[in-house]
Length: 217
Image 1: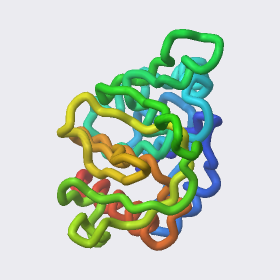
Image 2: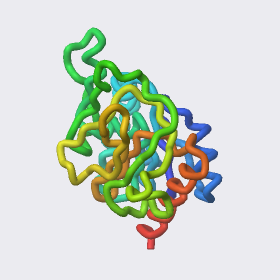
Image 3: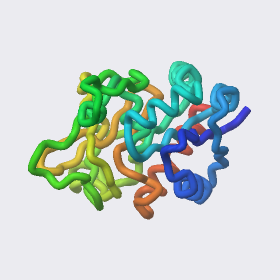
Image 4: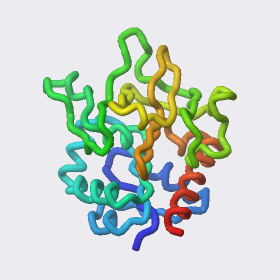
């Protein structure tokens, strides 16, 4: 049984996340094999680029069912950047192209990915604070809201809008307050890139490793 699987959707910098996860003493495997994903004890789902393109690749690789089964099995699951957005029902991104219909996600978390409002520089690139809305093991040892939150590295043009406020784990100011971290039971998502966020990002990945260990026990 694979302990930690990093999903290969062909839409992520797998080398960076793999090295960061190894650095915090976790033993990941990179895979797009449905059987490997189905046997995972934990999953990291990274992603960059176009929502519609990534959704299409996931469908073509026949990963949708495996990912949903893993989520339903209540194993620790972390979506990163586009990987988090794909956990939601849909995205506005496809509306900007030839299609007038939103691209569909995994619908593991009700809500959608929305483009930043006009007038804000897009993409949102660089370091920004993430303020946890509540105490959670994923942010253990990092600055909480009373101290303004912790800086992480972002690069994205869309942000998630959960329908259920209870799924919001953290938020960030960028002209307005947007959701930058989510949680639904075993399922986590972060809009920023922990693998590019220095010591804070490594601490978050280490915390995810402890969540995996606690779940195994």
